[in-house]
Length: 257
Ligand code: BGC
Image (tube, rainbow, N blue to C red; front, side):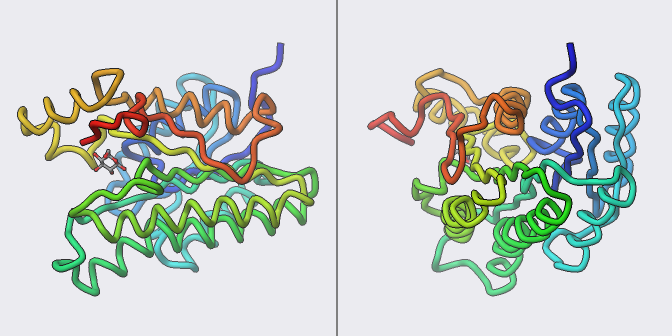
């Protein structure tokens, strides 16, 4: 039986840590060849490539700051140069500053918007152009958040970026549907990754968070990656221009955070 994503080629931005790392590994386990970027931690990318090759997969690392358009373009081009095509684009790279609208500096604003939203916008554009040129459609997965919809006071620029990704997913999904390209958002709730280190290190904040989550705990990155593999596969062939939330039920909890 062929693997779910056999012969597919994927780019995962922010692929060497957190949710992105788990997605890169899960896509490779499902048979996809994977391109991963790095800026500051080439060794983390190297370690992931070794892990992927150990299970018989294929991956390469590219030095790229995905908030910069020319770097992002180079990342997409690397997939085509090395593996001949691009089938799956995962716009995952994300940062947050945990600052309110009163506190956020222009520098913080630009950084958060560039890495979360601008990279997803142009990642979608570059990937879609390649998918249209090669023919046969494609899949673009935007890793958003429950905060594409839900305010998170004290994390304003991040919410703004994720809200933008929500409309990117919907609008580009409609625009690209005639080309057979599906654009889907994947919205995690709280996940045990470096972005949540401060929460995980503070027992009372963590207890409060866990009690607000109907499933009673944060997600492991692999639980988000499993949904990404589904969204990248033909099992999700009728999904586009919408977001699938993997949040342990937190958005439906009227008690909230
Ligand atoms: C944010 C986390 C937050 C979680 C749940 C994520 O998108 O990055 O900081 O804990 O949403 O609110």
